[in-house]
Every structure is written in C-alpha cells, then in structure tokens.
Length: 445
Ligand code: URA
Ligand code: CA
Image 1 (cartoon, rainbow, N blue to C red):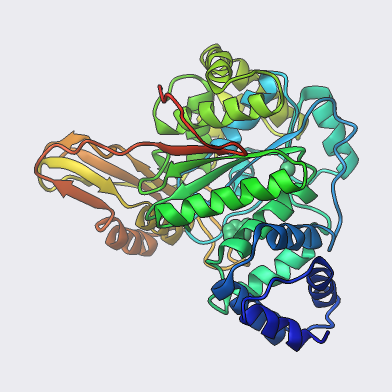
Image 2 (cartoon, protein in one colour):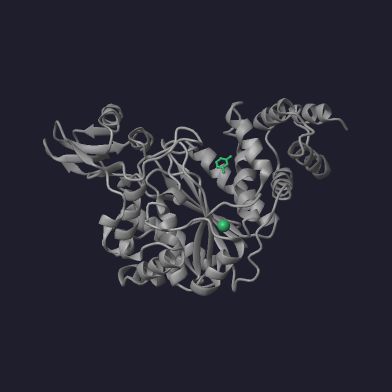
C-alpha cells in the first residue's frame, strides 16, 4: 500500500494495521516519507483518533526507531515518573533522592525547559560544578552505588518523536491524545522504565485544559503501559495554580532544598509524597499509597532524603555544601517587590502568566537555542485562598536586566485574581487511575 493510501485510510477512520504503522514510522525516520505526508497523517490522527491497539503499535514503532537504555543491571524494579509539564514544578529534584532514600533505584533522564515550563537539567546546572552529562556506564554505576542519578537525555532515544513533535508543533497537531500518549510513553519505555508513574496536569497552565481530555490522556497512557507489560498509573493534578511558590532555576533548587530539609510544607511537598508513594508501590516496596506516604514522610522530616541529594550532588561533581548554604547558588543582582494595591482574598494565581513572567526575566527559553539566566525568577508570597491586606508583599522578582523587569511586571499584573469574599481553594489531586480504573484516594496531607 502506498503512503497516500495509508493517509486516506486514516482520514476515513479506518484502523491501521501494525505493519502499516511500522512502515510509516520507519520510513519517516529514514527520510523516505516527506514531512508533508507525515503532517497530513498527524492531522488525520488528530480528527479520527486511534484505538488502543493502534496507539500501542504507534508507541512501540516509535520506541524501535532508536536506541533503548538497558537498566537490567540495576537491582529491583525501575520506576520512572513523568509530568506533562507543570509550572513551578520541581518534583523530580525532591522525589528522586526521596525515593532513593527509601531504597528504590532512580535512574532518571530529564530534559531542559522550553517556554513557560522549566526543565530539571537546567535547574540542576545551577548547582556549582554539578555535571548532567555522564557516560552511560558511569550513570548506571552511580545508581548501583548510591541508588540515584539524574542526567540529561543522551544518545539517540526515540528519534521518531523528535521529528514528529517538531512537525506537530508547526501543523496544529500537538493536542491529539494518541499523538501525545505515544510521544510520552515511547520516551519512558526507551529510557528503560519497567513501570511508570504519570502526573497528568489539568488546568489553565497545562496542556490539558478540560477534565475529559485529561482523563482520556491518562487512561490512554495507562492502557498502553498495560498492553506492553509496563505497569503505569496516573494522577490527575491541579495546574490552575503554580505547584510551588518559586519559579526560575536557582530559586526552584532552593525551594526543593527547603522541602528536602522538611521545612517547606504545601502542595509541592504533598504531591511529592503521593507520587513517591506510587513509585514505591509499583516497585513493590509497599502495598498501598498510604503505606508509601507513611514511609516517605520521616525521610523528608529527618533530613535523610536531603543527605541522599547531597550524595548525588557529590557523585556528579557538584558542591554539596549547597544543601545548607543557598548563597552558593547563582544570585540575581537586584530584587523588586510587588505589593498588594488593595485588600482581598487571592482567588487565583495564573500558572501560565506566572511562568511567562519568569521566562521574560530570562529564566526560560523562548526557543531551543535561547541562553537562560539561572539566577533570575520569581517568588510568590501568597497562595490561592490567602487573605491579603493593602501593601502586603505578593511577589519578589529577582532580575539582572531592568528592561526585562518592566516586561515581567506587565505580565505579573495579570497573574493574580482577587476576590472580595473568602475563596475556598481547589483540590491538588483530582484522580488516581490504574489498570483497574479510577481509584478512590483518601487524600490527607
Ligand atoms: N509532552 C511530550 O513529550 N509529548 C507530547 O506530545 C506532548 C507533551
Ligand atoms: Ca528514565
């Protein structure tokens, strides 16, 4: 069958066969199918969708387009975590040492930030000396020795996704559930995960802006995991608000360290406990989420998870004194405080404009080649639900360039929504989905 016949087939809503999907992906990566045909196929998938078998075949065809990481020399079940893109979300920096401190191996590959969402590797690079490019065997050896390593993506993992994602970005086909699900799951599988914990963000700052879409995406990824024998569970979590209170690379490391010191409470810590508990459950370290949380909490509060992070920093060549001395992190030259011009209740902090304001200061990349400033960013001093009085500090902006400050201030003025009546706040976790369906969680923080 010719490529155009396959495009027409999908356009008309016919199910594609595995061999057809393999042919499409293989030939596209080899440059034998032009971008315009793949773009047309993506649009057909956008409108017609894919069934469970097709999206699983697409995922595995993408995995097979490149190299796969072999983590089989590491003891135990390897569980990876993925978030669909949060704002002020520094869970990976907290979770990785936390779960490792509980005895479960964490061999983590992370990415850089793009747009208003940050990247773990950029954040880690604000720790003086810390290396994020390790040879594959040194990466494995480090996890064998101290249970944890976080490195940048290296090697030729899922080249099909790199090309298809770039194409989707310019053809209006990013928000397609089968395309997103296969893109995410193929990367986790190629990175060697036996099992996967997903954090699917829902809300104004997320890819998924409706509950229906977020559930559909989560269920699709859980189903793919089930089909390929890599157990996957998914939380659906709130991204109407930034998760933490700091945004910007060094500032987010500081917030992660405060959380690892057990000093900082709130949604960021709470979500880490739930995601970590699910990782322990999949790794068969505990039987239930509640049991996992009970095991992890003391590791945060006693500083054992912080010590594990210090070990990781040292193993990767960084200065581990940073865990208690934040002045070792890159510092911005100036600060500007935004104060409340009126009294009232905070009804919302818009995650997207909060992220964009930090990007404007230089914390994030506008495109892949932008150079970022690790020292700049924003701290929020209030959270939704808080009552504020006139003149109370709302945000501190850390900046180096006064012109960028002006642009960031213009954005930040749209970030807060005030209400004259008390605001009840929103849930952090909406749902927990496993192969058995939606699970009831007795949320307690
Ligand atoms: N994140 C991904 O990795 N892929 C997508 O398609 C969307 C979000
Ligand atoms: Ca991984």
